[in-house]
Image 1 (cartoon, rainbow over the protein chains, first blue to last red):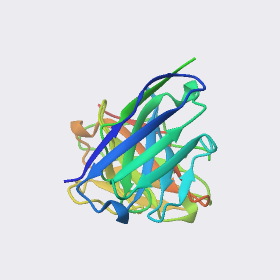
Image 2: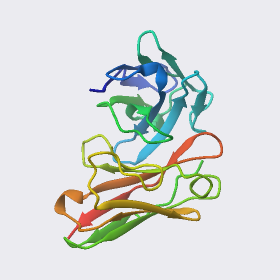
Image 3: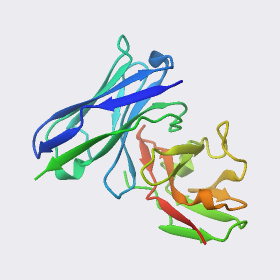
Image 4: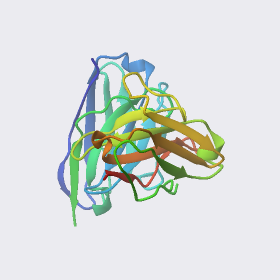
Length: 117
Length: 110
C-alpha cells in the first residue's frame, strides 16, 4: 500500500532554513505529481507547493521565493527546501501524491515545523 | 490566492441532510471542474471524500455527494451520522496553476 513518511521538521529560529523530506513507497513515484500541504496549529489546510511529473514547480504566493520543491525519482523522495522561515510558517507539513488535480487520496503523518521568533 | 469561502460551522440532527458551500471565483471554482472535498477528524490526516466536483473515491459512503453551480461548489451529507462530525475542506485548482483550499467548516451532529 502507499506509504508516505515526512521528516526533517523541528524547531528553528525565524530567518533560518530547513529541508523537509517525504520518502514514499507503494506507487509509481515518477508517474505522479506531488504536493506539500500544511496546517498551522488549530487552523485550516493550506496548499503550499506542488511539482509535476516533469519537475515543473508551483508555489502558493505566501512561500514563493522562499520555498523550493524538488523530487528525486531515483529515490522516490519529495523535498521542500525552506529558507527565510517566518513564525507564520509554523505548521504540520504533509506530502501527498496528486491523484487527479487536487485529489490527494493518500497522506503521510506529517512533520511539525515550529518557527520561533 | 485568497482562500475559498466556507461557512464556519454547519449542524444537523442525525438522519438529516446538510450542505456545505465553497465559494470562489471564475478563476478557480467557477473555471474548472477540479474541486475536491476533505474530511478531517481531530488529530488525523485529511480524508478525500469527493474529487472532480462530484466523484466519490472507492470506499466513501454514498451519503456524501458533491455539486457545483457557477462559482460555488457544495458538499451534501445525507442521513447525517455521529461519525460525520468533523472538519470539512474544499480545494480547487486555479488559473495560476496552483491550488487553493477553503476556510474550512466544522460539522456538528446535534
